[in-house]
Image 1 (cartoon, rainbow, N blue to C red):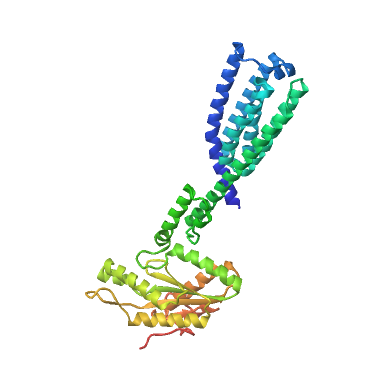
Image 2 (image 1 turned 90 degrees about the vertical axis):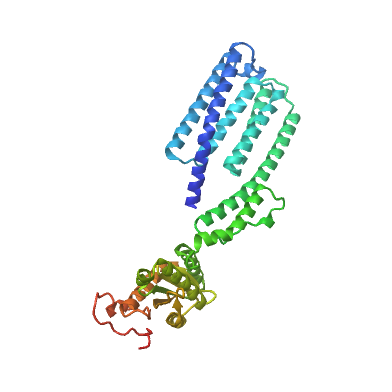
Length: 430
């Protein structure tokens, strides 16, 4: 929620920054024209303004309003540039300032029969507000527009003008209903755009599980076209972003995404999860002896072999150069032990590489299986699988070690020496 609010404030800041330039130019231009015409006696004050505050005061009010508005806009611009954020308060303040200027000009220069021009000008500002700031500020502005329109009509009536409230209320009603319809339509567009933004944000994090619901768009438009384009690209993006091109398995990013998802599910159902950390034995010698092309072929065949031996729901990933991991959901220690032995045997029987460069290769496997209490166990499981893998390699390679409490006490952290037999490990035949 905090990140979403921060992104919204940043987006509002960018909008306010470019809009303030137009506001300043428009305010200066309008003030120059209005004051110039007033000085040339080509623009008369409205009768209501003349009776209410007088011609001399009206000119000063007009000038003061413009100066205040410009100072406010420049102040907001400076603040936004410094903080690079603009919350709802600043957006609402800018909207209110726009309305004050619009209706003050209408009050000073238009007769009551032409006050509906203020609604026309405010409608443009209302649409801009909704497009760039959303529904809530637009509804606030609609209420302010209605109040300002009723206020200047009330002032005009109090000072002797012939105000037709029936006509004024009818005009306001049509404006209000039309504005609500515009807000409703644009809100629907905004909601669909927000859905697309959410999908793209999840894709940015490597989550391509959500597609755009094209069928929900009763009247397809440009947004629907973008949604269809994303749906067509989604599976390709999965391969590009989450899959290791050489082995055909998940890459580290794809594995982490699947890993967190499976842990969350296991935590809810209180089931076991097994993690197998695998490392090809003496793989560097393959590259040194046969070259990297053969090494790449070995990695590709390893990916095929692991996917063939894993179960349908298991997740196979290449997490490093010759390092792989298998996540086995709903798998006990016995099941993980059986899977590891099956993989060991498959490697012992398999010959890697092209016909002119056949390679026999073994694998070391570290295994851990736990009932998942919550998602915080993620790093612990990976650490335990790595410890078990390290134990397997230090005790002779070509075997698996099942992690258990006290594994460190067995001496696998020593740089040399004899290592005891690991309970549950499988040694190759002599």
